[in-house]
Image 1 (cartoon, rainbow, N blue to C red):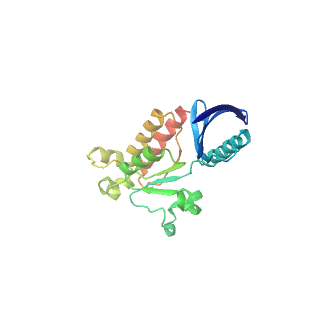
Image 2: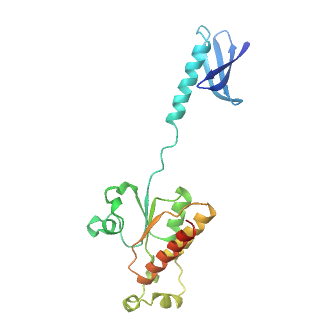
Image 3: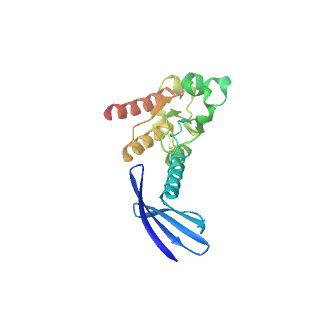
Length: 211
């Protein structure tokens, strides 16, 4: 089997191609940066020359453009154990994140700390995050505690098994720092006055320190 080696330039990029001639088939290899990027068999009677190779390379380039990664999908990550963002009659989205009312396919609902951290670890940062603070029954204080805005004191008397939205906010900051990323947009929909305030102040402080 005879082998021929040629070079060709397409769109300012240098390629090499080899042709191994056989009795029935000719094998073509196309190279770029010393790597084979395409192999093809053609019947021995088919013409093989620079024009054919150029067309092959142009087809390859067109396929590469089609395979380019699409722009990252913008997502609202809704962290809440109770408020269902898809229950539009409750108006949770309309009140806290109105942009997403007409983009429900881009809303992801996670109900606890573990689901929150897992989603971001697997998918990267969302465009916006909506934080609840109390993510489990054990986080719910008596109504008088909320009314007196003494949740912080009450919480110190407890030993929660489940992590709160504040823990999620702290994890998020660490994730951004470790990966040199900007904090995504956020909103807090928690009905816990102290918890909501703590999350807002913590994330806002991080933003101000990392302008």
